[in-house]
Length: 145
Image 1: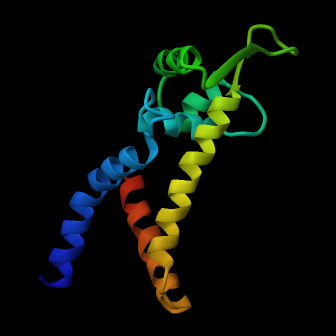
Image 2 (image 1 turned 135 degrees about the horizontal axis):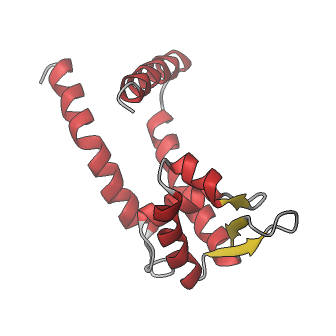
Image 3 (image 1 turned 60 degrees about the vertical axis):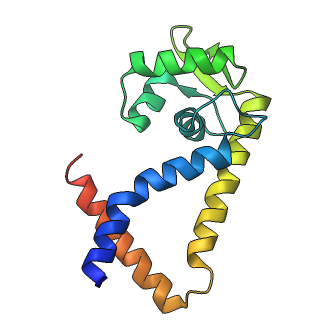
């Protein structure tokens, strides 16, 4: 297989492969009642200051209504907390519960291992080339967004 065919094959299949592998790695016995999508929502919510629904929806590129459905499920499952802003009672803030923080770190560990496995054994020059190629790929995809 030449470079073109190899790169084409990787690009066509990589997203689905990562999604499947990530699901198998992340959805353990402890976190069996959530999806990879739920994990990505929790990743955007983060572990720092509570965020308002609009900000999280914007970061995920979804409507507040769509996010509300997902957050309702995550609240029921005990991963997310919802509270009113003390400054403006109309604003709903969301943050991760202790269980959500634990899931967040579990997810972060998978991503760390994934990146480290790609970089393992690469020279600085090879790493720089890989980063440059991935930036080009990201720019290509962003033009369609």
